[in-house]
Every structure is written in structure tokens, then in C-alpha cells.
Length: 309
Image (cartoon, rainbow, N blue to C red):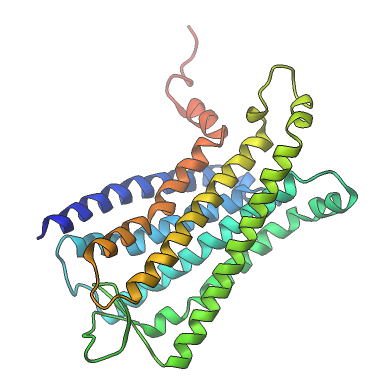
């Protein structure tokens, strides 16, 4: 095993361990708050979906990448590749949908109290669960092509490869089908990335414009950054910024790799490692920005449960 592959294997193990642990903690936390998740209008349901999609991405794609980095080859059959790559693609689609939905909901929540916004806020709670179900339907439908054009490792001389994942291959069924799939994926990703960017920019504008006014609505001496709506908005803006930056990086680097005649192992390994960054880092942005996590730990800690003497 080469030293670079060994280093990539260790990095992936660390990334997987940290990312999966963070997302599982969020899933357990929001499952613990069943009433909050099932309650109409709660953003906990969106955060639950985001943590679930991140866990799916890390487990279905991260584990094969680790095995491949540690020297295993051809360990997946055609069926195995389809079983892993389809949930991975669905999880990736759910991540972009959930991040976009979270940014839109938070932007509406902190919007001014005008009659138009007030009407929209009143209808917002009833739209969250249908929106989550719609994101599942879109992801399951749009990414169904993974079942058709993902196979086990193939020899590029025998079939036209669109992308080689070492343990799986993505083949081109036809030029027309490949173009159609690429257009659909581009439209979906472009729409959600654009919408979450607009919503995030709007939140920054609203928070900046009403910074002093919002501060006077709370107790004297209390920092505006400690207000729940400000913390929530900052958390969402941080998530969206991280996603947009990493998505732009992924798009550019993938275009470079697809057009390179000789693949660079350094570029491919860095592209692979950075591809898991959002799924591994985002749960800790959520944890850091949610004070309920501290209450959760205090309540469940042995010290807090100890009876006073």
C-alpha cells in the first residue's frame, strides 16, 4: 500500500468517525424530542432530515472509500454498487433540499411583521412536513438513474465510462440520456443552491438592518447575539455558506477531473476527502448554535440527577 493511500485512509477514518458520531447524536437528540419533531412548524424536523441525509452520505460512500483507500479492490458487485450508490445520491439530494428548506424557513421567520409576511408566517407551519415529503420524492425520483448506470468496476476499453470510483463505475447509457440526466441534476442543484443563497443573503440583510431595534426588544445588557432568533439565523447562514463554498469547489474540481486525460491521484484524493466535509462538519455547527444541547447534557448528566444533600 502506498503512503498517500495510507494517509487518505487514516483521514477518511477520522472524518467518518467524527461525522457519523455527530450526526447520530443529532438524530438521537431530535428523536428524544419526538413532540418537537412531530409538531407542525418545528424546524427540528428539517434538522432531523439534514442529520439523516448526512449520515446516509457518510455511511454509504465513506465506508467503500475507506476500504478502497486501504487497498481493497473489486469488493462490490453490480448489485452492491447500486445498493450503495443510490442511497448515497438520495442522501446528497436530501442534504441540499434540507439545507435550502432550512434557510427559507429561517428567512421567513425573521422577516418583518408586515401583513404579507404575517400571512406567510401563519401558513408556514403547515408547509414544513409536505416540503420534507416532497424533498424525499424529488430525491428518490431524480437520482433513480444511479440504479441504471452504476455498475461494478469496469474496464474503460470495454465500455464508455462517465466516472470511475475505483470500487464502482458510472457508465454512459447513451449520449442523449447522459445529457438529460446532467441537465436535470444541474437544474435541481442550481435551483436549490440559488434559493438558499438568496434566503441567506436576505437574512444577513435583515439582521444587519434591524440590529439595534432587535437589541432593544430584549432585556438591557443582553447581547443581540444571545437572542434565539439571531443564533438560529447565524447558524443557518453558516451552514448555507459552508454548503455553497463546498458545492462550488466540488463542481469546479469534478469538471477538471472529468476533462483530464491523466488523472491526478492527489486531486482525486483531495476531491474525495473534501466531498465529505459538509456532512462531517455541519452537525457540529448545529450543535454549537443550539443552546438546547447544553440543557440536554445538563439534564442527563449524573451530576444534574444527584439529589442535594
